[in-house]
Amino acid sequence: MNNFEYISGSLFCEDVDLLAVANEYGTPAYVYSKDAIIKNAKSYVDSFTNSTSLACFAVKSLSNLSILKIINDSGCGFDIVSGGELQRVLSVGADPQKIIFSGVGKSKEEIKEAIKNKILSFNVESVSELYKIENIAKELDAIASISIRINPDIDSGGHDYITTGRKGDKFGISSTEDILSLCKHASSSSNLKLVGLACHIGSQIMSLDGYEKSANKVFELADKLLELGISLEFLDMGGGLGVSYEDENPPSPKELIALLENKFLERNERLILEPGRSISANTGVLLTKVEFIKENFLIVDAAMNDLLRPALYKAVHTISNLKGDQKNLKRWNVVGPVCESSDFLGKNVELEAVEGDILAIRNVGAYGFVMASNYNSRLRPCEILIDGDKTKIVRKRESMDDLLALERFTDD
Ligand SMILES: Cc1ncc(COP(=O)(O)O)c(C=O)c1O
Image (cartoon, rainbow, N blue to C red; front, top):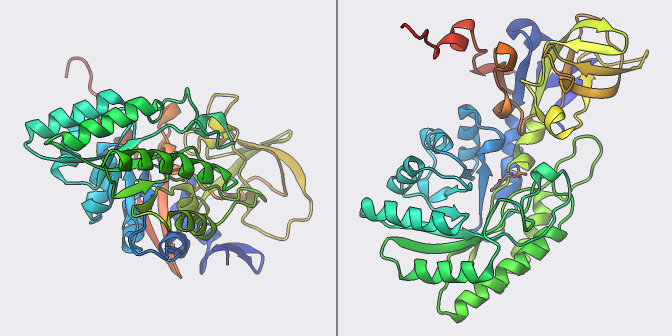
């Protein structure tokens, strides 16, 4: 069941009428369903048949503390890409042995903190990074657990900006020679422990082919390492599973896991995944009010600073009027107040709407609020979590004081 449904002509999230939420908390506002978050996290956790398999939720897709706590309680680990994300997951009680640290540009401070907290593994993305982690571990008189992220040269399809596993993309290490020599070095180092190989080929992936191909590449390398006497604890096949924004039909987490666990049957390594969007996307909507109507424009109070995906990737999100029973449908461009022509939230959207109506931009749980900014000195929206008939603010709307708080005059 979808957690956002029309009941008697009004759009509800779980048992709560979204119009009442907009009236009480204002717009723009991100609204999430707790039940959807649990169901999506469990769609990974409960699909594993091997108890050693692990899903590390990609925090970059949705990082609100209350939501991370729910995901942690559902049995997922976390894939992080910064010191800030490390702080977030530690503060919700994540087990450090379920934390993977990805990203091509980890700073010294970030590496230190992660080593001190004994995370499960760094996904090392370059030759230099491996030596940097080793030196920092030496300074701390510690052992850092690492995996090598390989670049398998596989095109996952989809938008250029979210394809990460082709030769020439900045992610992972392409050269088999480099990978093998790094693994040899790491296995003889007193400050490194080589625990795995990783790969992540992109996002919004609509077919399992890419996973099959990347698993084969990772297995090939793992076998070469076994021949050198180096065995690994896990193989991390990344995230990237697509979701339905309009009427797409991506494979389910269960299908992905069945494919991979079947391929892992003959192997001793455990399977790790790093899903983001497929857990977070359909858990949230962005509520926004129609301020003005001009020609075929619905000018709303949310903008590209609140939801960047349409401007950044030309991403398409279904947009619905909270009032159902639409009869006089017209085609609109839904745009925000930001002074850019790229500031649109939907183009050619079929809706009935009048000024003052509240719209819901659907499936914005992933890469929604996390990409919000203060561009045009706009205040970032609040985040609200619905649990049955209960409504909780899980991040306050920013205030004018928040906006100005960090700035100083030169003579202060
Ligand atoms: C290293 C890594 N892992 C996991 C993810 C999550 O991807 P998705 O949200 O598409 O599942 C990303 C996002 O691009 C990523 O860069």
